[in-house]
Image (tube, rainbow, N blue to C red; front, side, top):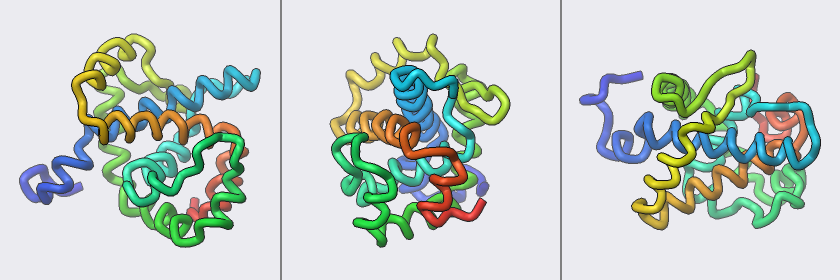
Length: 171
């Protein structure tokens, strides 16, 4: 990852570690909530899906193309949105260092923890996150709402290797 001073204004504003860690927290939170609702024993967001989820959520054009309900299958969405599928796969590669940096930031600040290969959303952080979101822009709130949705959606999409294959992501 390049030094902070070498990053463009867009990278500093849109892909900063705190914002991305917050998005990943929402991914993990949504995943856990859906797993609980489904009675699954999967207790955290698989690490590989943090990269996929970030690619789905952080690119506005892709985020706008997401389905409105988790009843829509990932396979159907991929079939109906081939250009977005390609953008997500490329985004996983492009955002790899950004997501890694966000994971470290999130772990250092108690937002995220890693249990094996699964990310846990820190429960103690929820109150602070909600307070932050109350004063955030509509776009930030929408991004985090969509991150929660994507976490739930990915939980229903199948095992991580299936999700990666559907999206054309090389493991």
